[in-house]
Image (cartoon, rainbow, N blue to C red; front, side, top):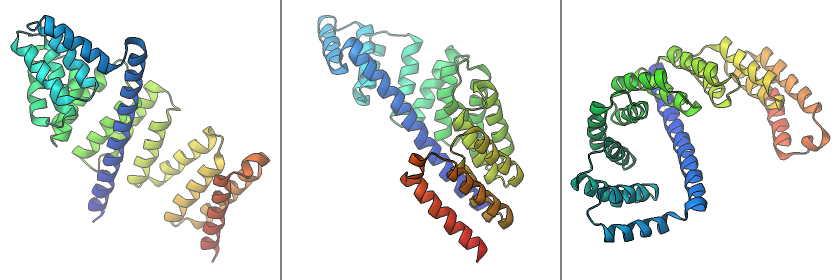
Length: 294
């Protein structure tokens, strides 16, 4: 029963992480495209210009590849694939085209064709870290978790510009492959914190989540203390810690944490005390204190 509950929580966590990751990717892509629009003109105009060039040189495979990439950036995936395949048919044997086809299939959620394409690419350039990451992502969506884990392990060992979302994605795969393997997931978070800095908030939050999910109560409490020490708005973290202590049937410690939350609020500037979020927090503190003392 406990494993089923953990699996359910894991699926929910993976879903949220995937959503978060897509939001991050969308934000990065949107920002990049916006910058390009200012620097080089809007994508639609670029596509029209490239189409005009193609009309003058209809057998130039490089032009079809370039327009395909523009269509991909414009999220017109079917048109992008048409141009990539046309470029290929005209004699484009550049390995980067094979990678783009794999990437486009992945974005289109055609994971089986994406896997075939990235496999062909990796047969040529087996050490390409970006391609290994794409392979791992494809395998994850195909539920080939062990293979995905192996591919992403290579990424973790060789990626130079690792980001928090890469660490989080890897831990999702670790737990998908074995939903009780919180020890390795937390160890991966620690490696990420060493590489990216101890105050990387996304990793510290995920560490707290995994400690709670793994029922490591003492370390979870230490993690709450980390947030209390490191962040100015201590009142919220004292309350969160109290709430967690209540769930662990540690009422006396919960009461102490609630008193500390109240003290932290009292120490705020007057302008902060009038904020709606603080007023709501005070109500929650009182409600939790009443539930403990009745």
